[in-house]
Image (cartoon, rainbow, N blue to C red; front, side, top):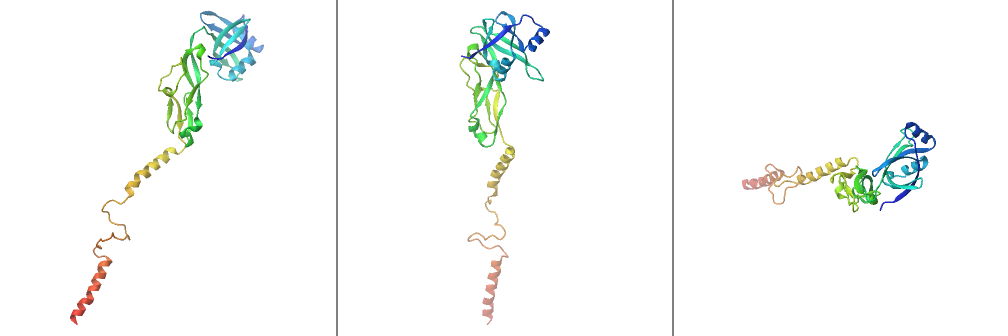
Length: 249
C-alpha cells in the first residue's frame, strides 16, 4: 500500500487573481481540491512546507490526507506551477481519491546494478531514454518507482519495457517495445571494432597460398630442383669441364 502523508490547508473563500496574489503575499500558495463527483474546494497551503514537499521528489505520486478545518481529504497532487524566475510554487491542484479508485500516474525509473553491467565495465555509459513510466493502478497500490536492472547489458544493448517486471495490479500504458535504457559505447569504439574486424579478416589471407613461389632470398623446399639458370646449375657445369680435359690427355 502506498504511504499516506499529512498536509495542512486553509479554506480560501475567495477566488480569482487578486485573491491568489494576496495569499502569496501572506506566504501561502493557492490551490484547489477537485474530483470524485464533488464540488471543487479552493484552499491555500503554507509556501515553505509545499516547497519542501516538491523539492523532496515524488510529489506527484504521493498520496496526502489534507486536513482542512478538521476534515480529512484524501488526495493526490496532479499539477503545480512554479515561478519561471524565482522557482517558487504559484499554484497547486489536488485530486480527490475515492476508495478503490483507479488512477493513471507517471512513476520515475530507478536504475539498478549499473556498476556491474558488462558494457559499463568495458567503458560504456548508461543512457536513460525514458525517465518516467506511465502506469495505471489502484490508489492503494501506487509504486514509488520502478526498478530497471541493467546488470546484464553489453555495449549497444537496450532494456525495454517488456523486460521490466511490474508490481501486481499495476499496468503499463506505454508500448511493450518502448526503450528505457541503453549502454552507449565509449568514444572511438566503432573505429576499434572496424580495425579488429579488418585484422581478423586479413589473418587467413596473409597465409601463403598453395603452390606459391617462395619469396626472394628464401631457401627452396627440400628436394626441389633448382630453377633454370640458378647458381646451383652453374656449379654443375663447372664441375663437368675437367672431365672433358682428362679425355684429351
